[in-house]
Image 1: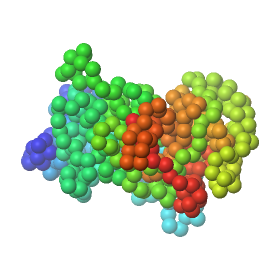
Image 2: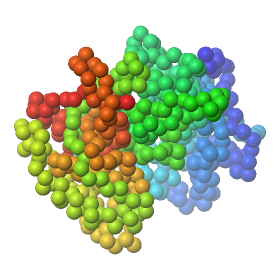
Image 3: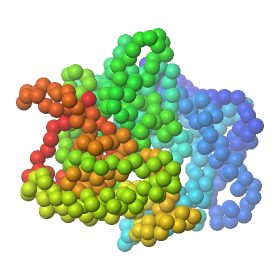
Image 4: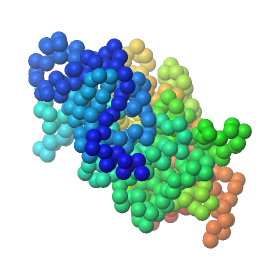
Length: 512
């Protein structure tokens, strides 16, 4: 309904609120920056440098200082506008397209200064240099630059363009786009996005588990409906690998219109709390911390598979996966960087001991598994083999030397910054057959590691005493603890060489 209202409007006006001490100056500056192109002597223009600094501060503070950017329902104002929306703040205004051209100019300046741009790979490149290429060259042409960070306005503009070209977006993408958005009723974190779905995706005949707006449902059921829909669309395992999970028996967000005395059912462990998808609100680290470099997936040939469905009890996820191993040792790496570094000698010792353990599972898989567990060095495992600057390129070779000199704690470098960014978010683990890796802090001995086909990361699952009755008899159930990074198998080795070659069978998991 709201989509139709906004789509029929002759003009959409985005009201950001009253003026403040800087907004008038910012809005006067935006058209000037929008009309500029980059020039090698820009850094010598003090007025331009001051203008970029002023606008960058405005852009970075939009979510906190301008409520329009934090409300989930108003996303549709922009997304379905037929004409270029007008953005108004106090008595000043600019068109949305002007705002975005100015944003692009400022982004290039700001993110180049902090090393968050790189030259796009060319067809004639023999290799894409990692590390130095990310630092950026201020004289590269517009078409050569890839900016590695985004402000909220950039994310909303992506949606605006997607609505124009595709008529909508997938639910999992909408949930990522709106992850900083808020709603008074937590169920509206889902319901407010339904009008923005791609036309074919929102058709109940083609969507599998369709989502019906029903405010009689508790939050846990609405969020489970959303996840069932995402799994039915074939995006479930990948989406689940990147969100902030809640752990086991987490309470669902309270509905303000209900008395606090009315108990709401908790969230199933495979259902995220969509009101806590930013770091300061989350109770666990994001799964992306454990993602391998871009283009690599623990699922290997199964990376794009359609896998998983919600069962009729509305709380159980049935999903196919590959059992990796059982956790033997777990070491939380600490809440401070000094504690983290102090733990590393113990971690190295545990890793060395683990890799000497005999492999006692599938005999045919033994040579492969013994090779996998020794191929990736610990310094890569601790940072999920990713470059600190880009967050998705493979870790450059110089990081190894940086790891070896970590005893000098006063020496700052990219590798040490990467380790420090993980403080409080990681545990180290070993398994009964000698694998080592990192995982969500809530993991413990006896949990199992499994690759759920379609996910780029293995998950930590906790066996439950409760069973489920199926056509093949009683089956065990698990709870989802979180994501993990397992050294030696993050490029799909197990799926490709063991599962696809019939050396190992898959397992059907029932997750609650």
